[in-house]
Length: 80
Image 1 (cartoon, rainbow, N blue to C red):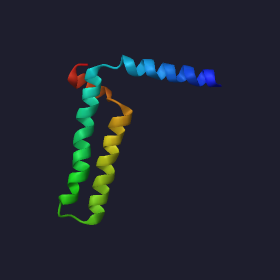
Image 2: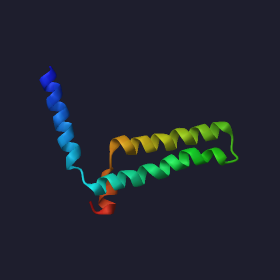
Image 3: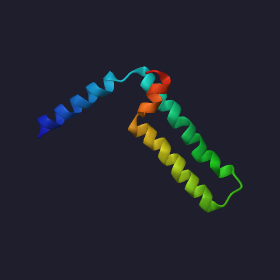
Image 4: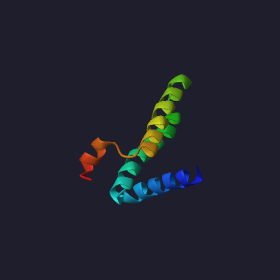
């Protein structure tokens, strides 16, 4: 069991090392605006419910980009 887990971590490490710097920049470029907007919406003069919905959507999008990596359309746009 330990050996299988070690192999899995080794496989993940090799895959992460194979990603380019450009992929990291693309992910960062997608995450940062979503994080900024998810907190900036608090300054808007709208209801608390609307603010909560916006925060849920924008923060969720940022986390999706962060943990999901670059979507294929973003890589096509950047030419990666």
